[in-house]
Image 1 (cartoon, rainbow, N blue to C red):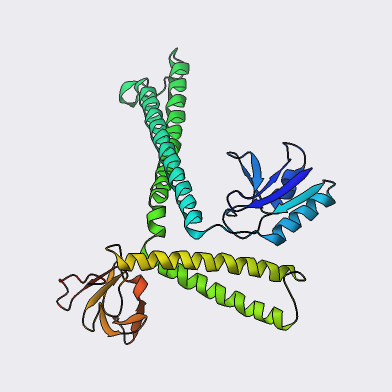
Image 2 (image 1 turned 30 degrees about the vertical axis):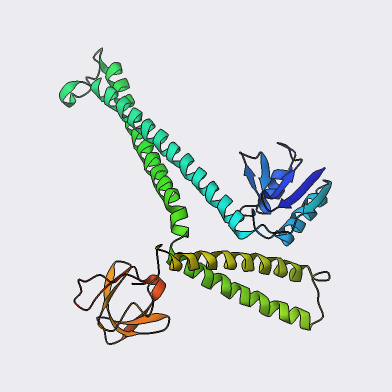
Length: 313
């Protein structure tokens, strides 16, 4: 018996599978992944999210068609936003630590690979002496060259692996801080609010047509997604309010800037022509102007182009 379960803390997983039982191709096709740490198949990014009912039902139907007995146990409740995001931050911290350890191992392996290459090069005749064909040293010389070439390739590959691991560790280390920057939170709230409005429009149409969550699976999914978005918007709005109310990081606003000052966006400075409700109009090198949203402004200077302007001050 295979059991597909969904809980807020564990996400969507399937129990009862075993290696070589034939379920892997079906689950891979349906978008499931194998979790080595949990030794089970799971739907990615399903923890503390609304269950993806259509994918679950599609997977169950495909498995039943292949001759497997499948049951489902779906918990549609959502945890409090603070608890959900706290746990996610802990997972991100653990992942960053694991990637940092991996990067250190890869760097050590790269150093060892270079040491082996140096040792192999030391065995070559000095001065780049050519191979003496027919001489008793020919075979030894060719073996030494082969070792030097092999260790050189291994060192290059080890360097690439170390750089890749170091970059992954660097990105993971700043992922949590990045998620909580005011600009990122602002854009997230804007995006989620737009998604919520779209869902509400669709639900209004379904209700007008006489559908309910009990009669329409799609409407049921929309209501679950709506509850998830409302929870997340409430959480992130509270985070932004706390940032604005304390000495935490803040966004630039209309009150901070004025025509004639300078703003920095993506490393480029622009002169402000007009200050609007949600953006500033800036001059360009051409005959037209551009608009920069406040959440894209990383820094600002007064009209003298030197005096810093701090948001909220």
